Image (cartoon, rainbow, N blue to C red; front, side, top):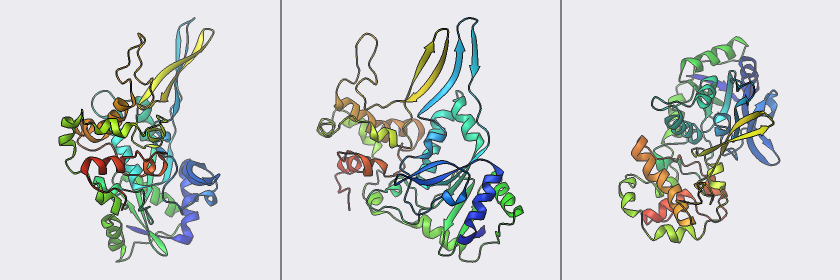
Length: 343
């Protein structure tokens, strides 16, 4: 492990921009979001998490799959992404990428669009110094504010410096490239492991209160539970939960044509929209909010676990902070477990 003085962070980020295009958190219109930056002075560190997750850079809200012509028949593939570095991803969003990997890269049929973006991107994660105890609940899913699994580089903020740990060969290459530009990266002192463990052992009251454990094992039997009707009465069907969620991955495919040319697009969709499963003949397998509410939570808490062995939630807290009616994952977990969610 290495040590990076806080005063040298600007030089470190400048070195990263020299290695590849840098995507990092910046503050715009009062919100923190990820975007490409050229000036390290734009990058912010005083935030709990970004308003939207970095999922957009791997599975964009709208992406062009290919262009096509009818006469003469031809298909023009979308441009492949070049190398880039994503700096500042939090552990919950890092874990969420792992869930998306299982969906898009698991098995024999891989999603080429997602795969190319993942392979092109180096991940530099930063542990959470000040998680929001009113909304963050990553510890419910055996994560922590210091979990670095899946990152190339992991940074643990200390009082005067960061402990920097390279977790992959690509992470080592980034450190070596920064050192070549003159960024001081001495070996970390004896307190490095202790700092790392402080982050990894930190508990979040909300997460510990709604910890699901083996809850998924009983949810098949609760498919017809009256709770889903009761909960759905609060839902507005706005879809903000799915659009902010770092693990939601439903999409639709549409063609935009003009004359004999067109563009095939993939766009995010939401299981909370009333026409999500509407068929050409008019049949809708989920005609009411009850079915749609139930689908959202059983997919994340039951079906995904049965298929992939882990819950489709990482406790980022965005639904807790932004659902206008409080029908968020922490609340539903607490209801299903019969505990108090907000402690």
